[in-house]
Amino acid sequence: MVEQAGRAPMVAARTTIAELLERWFAIASGGAPTTTRQTRSVLNRYLIPSLGERIVANLTTGDLDELYVELGRAGGVQGQPLAAGTLARIHVVLRSAFAHGMRAASEADHLASRFTVS
Image (cartoon, rainbow, N blue to C red; front, side, top):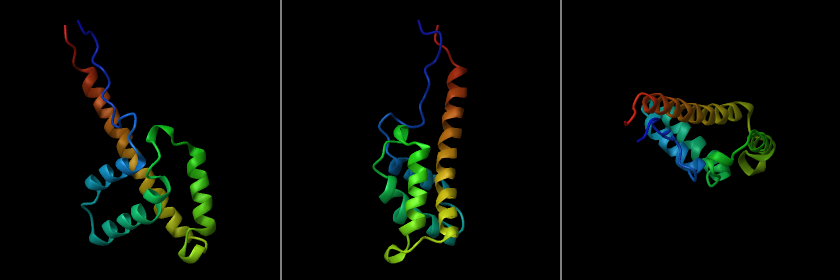
């Protein structure tokens, strides 16, 4: 008999950053057209090429620090430094996607804890 329901992970063990970002974008992209275009641009130009193939569970804060430093140094047009506002937008998109994943995982844990099989 099962006494405690198992946890329902938001992200499978081998989920990539690109998969997580695309799932989040599908939900979050219902806003203003300009915001949606800017967000898609951040995903396509910066986050997916830089981190997309990485496994979510293996990403570290050090990886993100390196990304921000590299983009700030040479992430702009023709290797120029990327504007601070663009770096901030990249950070907001990434933070929002991960926050959504955390909320969804927390809700799944909460729902799963309410059910048992006896």
